[in-house]
Image 1: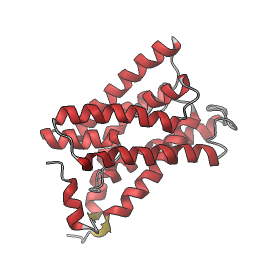
Image 2 (image 1 turned 45 degrees about the horizontal axis):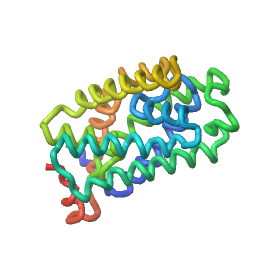
Image 3 (image 1 turned 180 degrees about the vertical axis):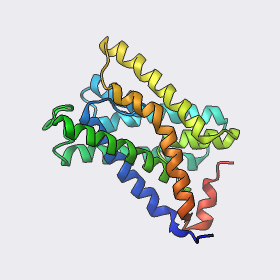
Length: 232
């Protein structure tokens, strides 16, 4: 049996934040439709134009965090690190959209890039998003609330994480559809790309997760500290 490469989990956590915020900014620029996960926050940012995409993420993830605590009937101080991850993610997302002209809606409105580039951005962004989520699942540090919710609920109730992730994605899509119809009487931020990601995201994350498990072993640098993040 081939020996696995050992990787410290803590740097993986920060790398995953950088990757997932970058991929979300990239997909948003294509205007094919954002991920079903971030669609509610993006639609809210389109409605409340005085708030950035990242700031609306704080609102949506805060609501989901409350739902999580009610579902598990428990509130632990360490859980709030998940919301902190969401805050960092939102800030980095806004930063990517500010410093990269192709992602900045003030410089390059979503959908204005050449069609071929938009397709490449979308495909790369979709796989990068899934890879980032798979990385989050390999570290003990809590991911942003979306993925923390999936990780925590599936762990708490013994559910298959990939299947539950797919159900969660569909639920987010349904919420986004309701929001865009109520706010705009039409579809904004949701498109064919959203449907593709809803159908494939969970399976791609599962694929990356299996590949990571095959070649790598993720270990915490701070073993005692990591025990505080046990969801059981």
